[in-house]
Structure formats: C-alpha cells, structure tokens
View (cartoon, protein in one colour):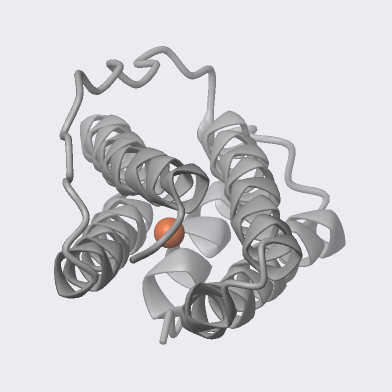
Length: 167
Ligand SMILES: [Fe+2]
C-alpha cells in the first residue's frame, strides 16, 4: 500500500497531465486558426502524448489500488500574440511539469517508496526529452532570428515544427 502523500501527488499529476493535454490542444487550435498547419499538427500530437502520460499514471494508481479523483481541469489560456508566444507558453509549461515530476521522485525516495521511484524514472527521462525537444525549437528560432513576426521565417518555423520527430 502506497503512502497517502504519494497517492496525493500521483493524483495531482493525473490532473496535471490532463491539463497539459488541454493546453496543447488549445495551442493547436490557435495555430489552426492562424493558418499554421505544421505547428497545429505538432501541438495536436503533443496533446495526445500528454493524454498517454495521464493514462500511464492512472494505470499505475489502479495497479496499486489507489483511489483516483478527476477534479475540475482549469481552462487553458486562449490568447497568444504570435507563434513565439505559443512556443514559449509550451516551454514554460514543460518546466513546471519537470518540477512536479522531480518532486514526486524526491518524495518517493525520501519515503523509501522505491516502487514509485522506479515508476517515476520513466517520466524523468521523458521530461528530459521534452526539454531537449523545446531546446531544439528555441535554438532554431534563435538561429532564424524568429521572434514571432510574419514573413518567410514564420513559414520556416511552421515547417520545422511539422517535421519534428516527437518520439
Ligand atoms: Fe507529460
């Protein structure tokens, strides 16, 4: 039986992954609306990935016979000035998720819950991948001197996001 503190953190993470999925879905919608098909595809795929993260924690909690509560999920922000704002919003969100995952790992370790520690290691690696991915996007933007402006670089960024391998 897992400790209540761990159960609470895992449950919060289920809801956080759900929220993340909705943020990416909203970012995808914003890109669709702005005619940025490549970016829309990228964020739509990412939304599904977050949903899979939620499923993974959901399954682990179910295996451990922990009660799961799906709470009210906050509405993601809808207003963005340009594609660079969208990218930055996604990156900032990933940093928050990394901090949450690290906190679960730290707590599991301190409570000597090595089963959860082992489980959450996959997410630590995953967050590393996410940060590498967004690092690539940010450095591409920097190379192109893309700050969200319209024109040729916007097209290049949109295509870059379309072609990015997220797995
Ligand atoms: Fe995630």
